[in-house]
Length: 102
Image (cartoon, rainbow, N blue to C red; front, side):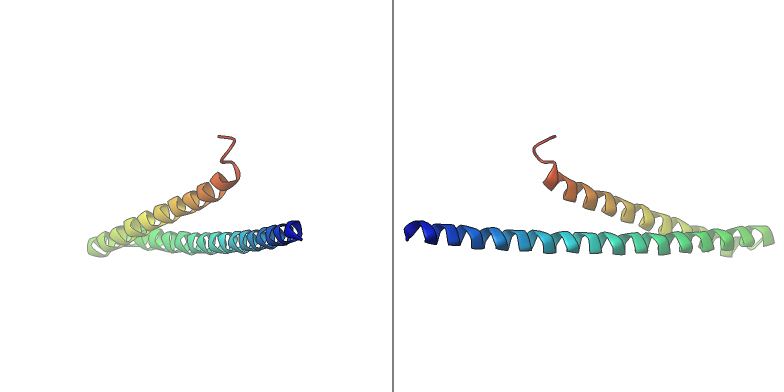
């Protein structure tokens, strides 16, 4: 009887661990999907900013060009930060799986 209790307890703990790992994995992929969507929106915004900047330069609107250049630089910094975040998410996820092999 004693071994049956131990086996049942171990089976329950293993089942809970597998269920928690699966839920965490799904959450990681959902987070990465949102991050990639955010990068796509940022890239579209940067493309619009570049077009607006080029138009202001071409038409000789220096004050508007300066504002557009500042906006473009801010968006590019945000894009780089988002890319670093994705790299850290991948690195953190992979380190769990490859911890013993590095």
